[in-house]
Length: 270
Image (tube, rainbow, N blue to C red):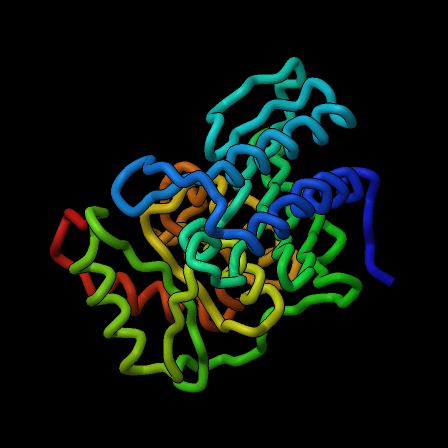
């Protein structure tokens, strides 16, 4: 039977409540009010409303916890040891274009360590959740990372820069290197779901640069609780602040890390 603690139940309930109007918006995309935050980085009225609902619901049940959220930034709480890290719509560009591949992502950090995560795609009703020490689940099904040990039969996900973002040359070099020795790569536009797919064995691994903490916070817990390894692209543990991530099983993670490092050996910039 799937494990759900009171803490997980709180996060799941908040995600489901925030998702209901989001589903209605997805069915009426032409009515959305869209503004530009920056090159290729769109924010919609749905983003802002979803974040507001999440913060309101979580604050009711866990008063005093702090927040780090994509739209609202940092809000310190009286409880200095706990912080929710929120992405109201991970995959905003997919959402705007009517692609049903996006998610509400909520991670809980305790004393600097990620301890719980929920990733919810409201269109497919796929609910991924995990808590440290208690496993990872999709709805009521226990998740495990794939067991492949070699790169050749493996399928990987990648995040790629767009428009004016930096790192195009490096990203293309890394993608080309992985394409040459694997079954392929996929770029589907939502880091949280990429990590959830690794946790569930759909992808064998995932890497990306230029990320924010809310992109990966929940996914870190999911992958680890599914038996996978998570690091930054230097092989360290600075995934939240460092802006890079790599996750796979224990066999593929070191192989993929070595390969990616070798594509850019003597260059210091992205």
